[in-house]
Structures are given as structure tokens and as C-alpha cells.
Image 1: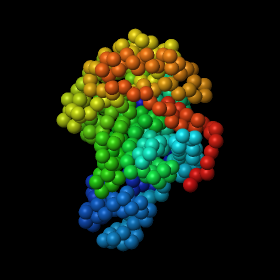
Image 2: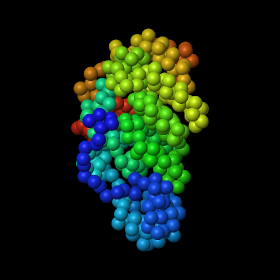
Image 3: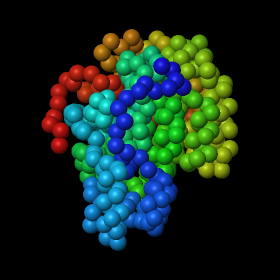
Image 4: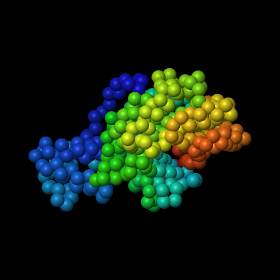
Length: 363
């Protein structure tokens, strides 16, 4: 199955209330002969007050609450396993209604919590350095499976937090799951829903140019481009999607993105995984600096996180620091990603369904 092929048939679950945006819920309520404004208090009840039943919600008619509970599920995702890293990172394995599984990562830093959520079961893009690709193509996640990762991830987060960031950097390619991604962003940013600021949400993509522009037109969220190479020859090998949308095409798209009204002051994050003897030469550093300078950007260097059966190796520090200095000397904003959760295979590029090294009891 490729990125655009029909999904395989699977059991049909009961519709989940998390699948509906507030406008969609209001329309459904109006079809039942009730006031559509009830959607506001329902969103407050389930997202702000974490209600798992609608009976007894103030100013919500019991007949409507009963109809909703007969029609829609409000059950949480099943937590199959929780892994805790020595650095405080927590990885949660969720079992979906059809038995498929996805992983969500909670990354605490002081009072800040970053949730890394998955978009697909497996991935069809086949990036050679990514462990998720070893699972092969799977299916898109429903809106409710997106939202449940956030709701349950925050509930099971390993610390108290005052700031929440959401990154769509888990399993799968978010922009392949475009329609459900947009509905999810609507719920995450809804002031009656989870009320997250759009600038606290980052969507990572391997580089689907048409959807990049569609996302920018719909929501002023932050975009992270998984670049990982500075020539088409290397990127074609590492990331087959480059044969459809090459580097020149991508940067032309990013320039168009930054001309959109909601994106004019937003820097694109260029994610660059450094792989020993593949893309870590000083020539690569100079080419990366030129690409970064062509748009408003920030570069995040990611030393390759090795995983079982990995065909590549992480670079030596003697290579990494000169690479980083070339970017800095060119005036490029650059950071080195701190590896978190690699002892539980929760670091960048390591998410896949595999046997755990150690487990904790699911709460």
C-alpha cells in the first residue's frame, strides 16, 4: 500500500465523541432537534473537566446526554504498556480498537511537557534510517485516536506541568493523514476544547509539498521539515519521497509557505539527522547553511539514534561540533537535539512496536 492507496478493511468501531469538531457536534445536535449551543458545554465537559459521562452536566438535557452516550463512545484508549526512561521520558504503548498499536512519548522538562504523538500505524514512506519504517505501511489514525493520545498522554505524564507543547513527530507521516490532522488541530486549538496555542504545536513532515501549503493556509502551527540530506542523490536514497518532491521543490514550497499571512513571522525547523559517513561532511554543512539561509529557519541537528538492525551509525563528536560551527559562523540558528529516552527506544527515529527492554505497570 502506498501513501494514497485505500486503507485495508478493518472492524468499524462505535463513533467516538473525540472524532467530532465542535462545529460537527453542533450540527449533529441540531439534527436531533436540540440547541446547537449545547456543543460548547459538551466540549468544556469532556476536554476541560475530563468527563467520561455526560449525564449530570449542568444545563445539558438528560435526553440529549443519553442520546449522545448511546451514539458515541467516550472510552479512553487502552494502555498496554508504559516504559520509563532514566531521564524522565515516558513512552506509552496504546492498543487501538482493531488491535493495532501506536506509541506516544511524554518528555518533561521542568514545568514544561512535550507530547510526541503518532499519526499512523506504521509508515509507507520507507525512510531508511527510521525504525518506524521497519513496520511497513499501516493505516491512518482517526481523529479520536489522535485526541486520545493527547488526553491520555497528559493524564499519564510523569510530572506536573504548566506549559504543554504538542509535536506530531511520532509514528507515521502526519500530512498523509491530512484531513484527520486538520480536524485534530481544530479540537486542540478550540477555546472550548483543549485550548492549545497554535504556536505550541509543531507538525513534522518528510516533505509533502501540496499538503505543506494546505496546512499553512488552515492553521498557523509550526512546521518541521525532516530534511536529513543536502543533495538529491543522498536524500533519494535515505527518503524515497524525495523522488516526488525534491529539495529544490521543497524549498520553493517553504518560501511560498512563509508568504502566507499566518506564517510571515514563523521560522521553519529544519530537522537534520547526522549519520556517520553519509551526510556529515563539512561540504554538507556548507550546503545546509545555504539552504537554511534561503528561508526563515532554524536547524536542529540530531545525532543518529541507533536501533536494533540499524544500517547506520551515529557521528563522532569530532565531526558534529565542526559541522555545527560552520552553521553558526554562517549566521544560522542551530541547536543540537538532546537525546531523550533512547534507553527505552523513545528517541527520534526509534518508535516502532518491538519488545521492551524494561517495563512499568500501566496506571
